[in-house]
Length: 635
Image (tube, rainbow, N blue to C red; front, side):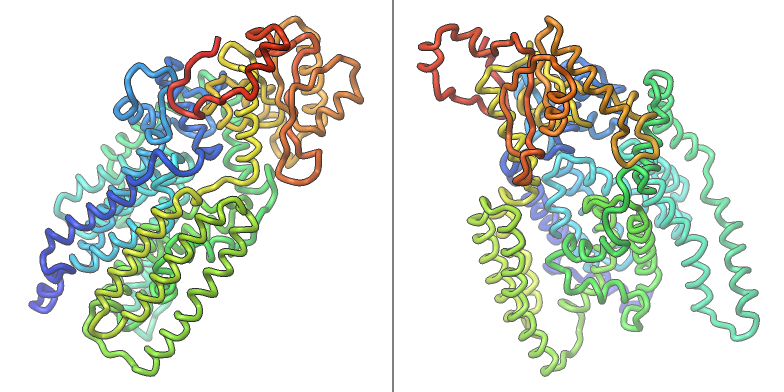
């Protein structure tokens, strides 16, 4: 290694590599762990994991988690296990309803911290210490990481496991030292990623690594040793060499380790849950092809999302994506191409899916961080000259663009979440002022100060706006109304509550403590929904029959149904139905309301507690219990 390279590797942000790492750890921990008990309600998908983990702790079993009375096999159980273990550690002992929002979110926060340090370590091995720290800064402080570090969904844990798999693969293929251990780590991390969200890792890990090995490496070698004659033959020679070399990556102990970690759970489910294969085919293949929901966004849907998730470093992302092909970054071309293949192939696969949601792109954030590290180093630290005219023009564009972008964001945000305008206003002012000051500070002699101020702006904006980040759509308001109505009417643990339309909103079970039962089990829906984008007529007919039959019985039950189905029932059957209450939907149409029904003879739970009209009136308005934490029985 040359002396210049040694000096470059030993450079640090604070003149001490150990201090750099310590500051990175502390700053990442503060941002990732801050406010886990506060913020918005858990979303529906978060509540699935939280409620399943709660029922694990309450004795429903670990192997096949349950949400309500139904086994949840749509996704593997690793997130449920992690949340249950976390709750056992951080929640108070002997509470009636374990798994607080803090316990549910903590695995994601810890995963964000570990992913940050992992990307620092991988970036250091690729580029050197200083760029490695910058890669870690991007990973730990970008918008996507901060958001999903505070989400109880599996995305941040999956991102950590995917990044660890890529890191082990890189180490195993770049050095002979401890190659066997790195391969074992590769297979183990791959297996745990599958146990977190199978079969998603097969595509977002397997496809990029296959393209890297069989396509990118031959093209890189072809470019490094160009030969005008027989170029086509040489290309195929290099590809064949990679095919032969792939045998070194196939480790029998590693494959056995992968199968030992991942395979037992799907085998157990297959033999213990009816129609498991039909449900998995519906959940994975039909969702990807569009047979379940149809196409919801264009192929380019994830490109603007990449800019959003990587903020506040979005302006450097175009250069980062071009860096593997630019002469200025030729020293780091190979690792840059590795990261580029990672994000390009993954984003292309996600774009090809008919079903798209923002959270799927989170697994690309580590790859983006590895691309951005050298670009930020050249921008803020490298010895270089700047065009005075170009610098002034860039500052002018930013000084105008930052306030304009903030105002456009305000219009969009207020339209969707008008009740949160005050929070956005505070965060928006911080972003505008911080962006302007960072821009003004950027000068050849004050670039590091500009970067530090940008990071301080990120921290202040996030901590001030956390209550507004991650808000659900209008269904969140509707769910809150149902929870409050249930509490007010003393509908509790001893009451049967059935969700009629599709999968129930898991927040109802989580925030009420009820075991919400589905009208149809997943094992029944799988064969009926296959290849159909809408509910088949026979399913609706059977649903109406089940509800009317049970409303006619002498067993007390509550049914949560949409208004359209209730209107259809009233027209089709003569069974007496009592409407307990209804809540408004996400549109102005009454058809979007949710209606809670019960047996005609059921006078309600609060009438049982306060039999006389005078007693009931004296108790109004009924104070509601906390929506999470230990609940006290009212019976």
